[in-house]
Length: 313
Image (cartoon, rainbow, N blue to C red; front, side, top):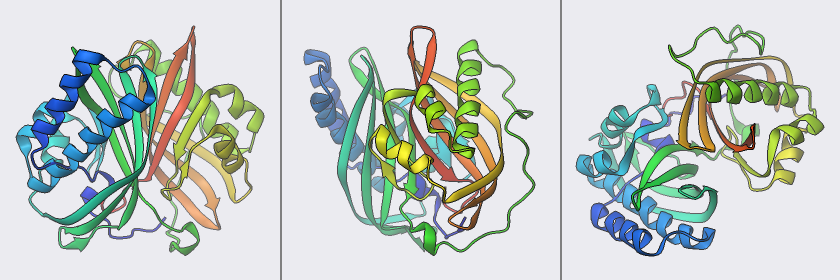
């Protein structure tokens, strides 16, 4: 994968000027009327995302302390982020943003009080003296408590042409079933999601579309390591079954589950594939998968993968 000089804000381009007021107005409307459709949620969440971009631009630490959920999880330049580390990163003083725009916003309701918004972000600016990639694909999960939407997850992937990326040397990888680096505590829900995640990676490795179909929900979306957005299950199945990837084995470790609703869980993890895609070494990935529970079964419904260790993730 290309180490393309992206800065920490690349993957988490967020922000807001009079951000707090915008967020308050959006949440007040929710408390009165409630979210009854994806279209209504879309209006509210776009306002909140715009507020986040303005807060990032204005380095508003107070905004982030109130805006992020207590169990927030995401990815940053140092790896996995929690609320404290995310607040610090999003209010960094080394960024100068000239302009930004959100487009192609899509909202999926994961549960009554949990929603996913994906979109394309176009940004002009620098962080750490380096130019930000102009176009990125972002994903944010919101949860609603007492009528107020809070950000529970965010990640952002620069849009690149995989055929133009300079190959990087690969390292030693393990088999899919090794899971030796784990958080100290794990729940039954996390273990269940990890089991499905392992099966999905193995099914992807061998291009088993039937197995992938069984493990995923009816409606799924995906953002891959190149920032490509796959909006439907048919699109994802076509991509995952393609033969441009030739992978011998995959490792999955450091997995952590975060429950955002009784039937919605976020699984963040680190993965590495021993093989190539588009003739280039796949290397390590910082991954996120969202699962929804139907009865006693967890189904994969959304994912975003980032090139791990990339300057700017």
